[in-house]
Length: 160
Ligand code: SF4
Image (cartoon, rainbow, N blue to C red; front, side, top):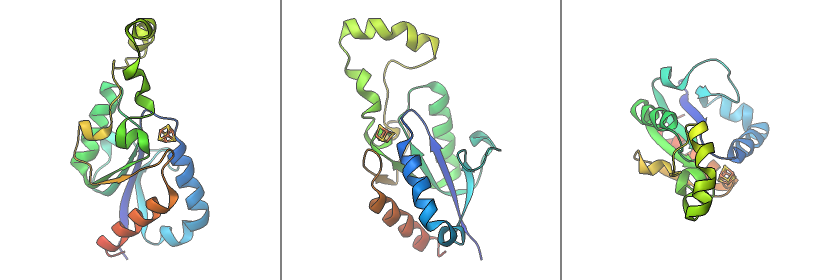
């Protein structure tokens, strides 16, 4: 039986929605394993690069965008995915990862050297600044119930 091909990636954030997802897998692994397979998910599969990943049905994106490299990967994800879902507040709205966008001039001057050192942009942005997003799973971290509801919606859509 065909399975839904899923991607999961983390950009700039504290990775807590990934922790929620792993906890959900503890409870749901055997049921979900019959219905989906991972095309890309670094916390579960070490091998593979996101830029070489292809043919994804639903890509879940956690975290905000703060580097050129993240933007490049995000645009690739959009090109190879039928649906892209933002998970957690950082991906959906930029916040709280984007707090430094609001720093005053003195504070921005203080962090400038660190931004340059790590190739970080001046501003941190939500993913919909760069690509079309099909669904949003809000929460900080993402809400379990809304995530499961969203996942079930795509299981139905892909007939798995
Ligand atoms: S949305 Fe909240 S919990 Fe999730 S990565 Fe951002 S800061 Fe962490």
